[in-house]
Image 1 (cartoon, helix red, strand yellow):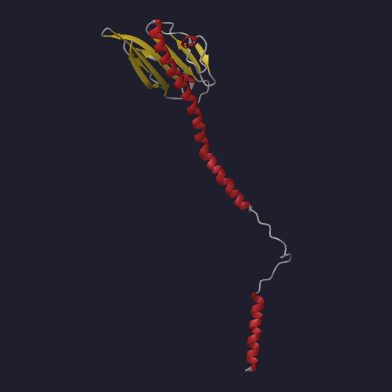
Image 2: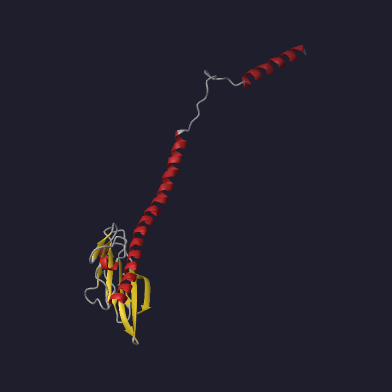
Length: 199
């Protein structure tokens, strides 16, 4: 019995000794923690994916902002032409006469950073005037607009319209078509706004 007890104690001490973790050399030194290469690569891949998703949207917003400039400029010129027609009995053929701001100064052409604007009322200043916006950047759409003075049932009326090209690029630049009592967009354009007022 004594031998069995002695053997049992001996086995338990061996097990206890084997179960103890051995400490490596230099275990008393502080452990420096950091990121592994795999963790850094995962973060870089995630950032790259987010950038790939966000970048086209960001670039698209820049194009939209430039096109908004042209829409506002044409609408502003159309309103100024309507006022000018009422005050001067004819449409203007000069940005200087209209004094619309937005960097549109000069005779029949004006340039901003994004578009070349052309004003034309020379053919028939009493009844119609056109404006076009031609972008130098092929990613931008072209714009055209016009003002028309007409008489219906003895009443004078003014109509104005702004049209946007369906496809981007300056190759599709054309002007509006004038009918006796209305303005039509060219076939490769869509209408943005239409206003009419009595005179």
